[in-house]
Length: 283
Length: 283
Image (cartoon, rainbow over all chains, first blue to last red):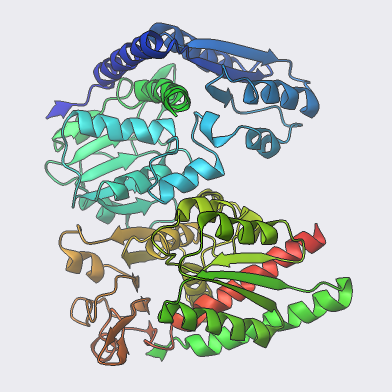
């Protein structure tokens, strides 16, 4: 059994990004910049944003955080975003969710052009992913999962990939990515019957549900690869969707929680920001 | 065993569309118009386009076919499309594929705004489908399959839907639609191992491959629902991906080929054109 070390993969990729950024600076005088828009004072959002700032600094991406008050008007937040849309120096724009209730989220997110949509959540980028086009930006968490699997040279073609969870930010985009990797993909969710049957057939099992220990070792195939994208907080501790101790008896590879999928999300945000910037520069 | 009668469902839906169009004309003075762009003289394409014209006439949609020569320049075809993009009287624009080799297909298709993309193939409409948004236009063949299943009140929630084929025009969009209908969805394809195992677990089996009689009755679950989107021509006859005689021994519901999925594609094109027009009118 091998632990898929998200911190290791993450730091390897961040080093590559840092290197690439240095090269772009050397070759083109290109600087990279991410603008993060946050409204209100949700403490969790503030931590996320701070972590993104730190990660940007680490790889040499300039970051700017536009912190708007809870009662910001639709017009105000839109004009802040439009400033960045029209600023050639800004490579990526990210609106930290959730936004205050009174704002029209869809309208706000629609302002970000697909080339600067480093979260990869827009209609266009989702469509490009679904259609197998390579010129979009992919959502960070599922893309990070693919990078983990590839780092460990885990064969994907022809494998039965079973994904539990069909969210727009993990389950569905990951299904499309694993399909492009030639997996036979099954997507399970709250309405699935006989979940344990599906689990028992998985060569690659991904959980992205948010239910502590939904999966244990019981129904797993020997040699399964387990990727746990669940984050469940209980009494100040973080648990995955998978019972690690029990599941790791059966698995060939398994991600821990924390330290598995988690670190990859921000890493792929850095990657998207680099990609958005270098595409513009090399075009 | 019940045959899913695509001609019947198709004509029922076409009658509804016709009715709706009459109402829109009465209430808003609204006329509906589809513009079809075709380049070159591929005989199959010409038949398809003629069938679309006829179907439009049948439900009261005005259609216009812009037939360009094989050697049309990129500029010429683009300006023909842009005329329709900017013409408020045109509700839907469809570029008949394949286009002559020398043209930049992606650039041409990108000119069609998502609201007039009645094929539903654009990045934006694909993304909206994937994200579960209801304001897009869905690709016609998979949408037609959903309509067939609903017409016969076939329960979908919690069922194991197995789709063979992962094309951008049928397999992938249908997977996303069936996921929205609460099916547990498995997508199989040329790299899938032990296809018969997946087939044997299907409550709903959809084939969209293009291989005559890929599936017969052997591995099917009793009571399976079979939707055959395959069209395979051999000696002037049309065959599906499923051996109907053998599979119908096991199936509760099954589509014939021809006369199953086939008639639905143009019907859903009419529906999309109506939808595009009425959305504009009622906005």
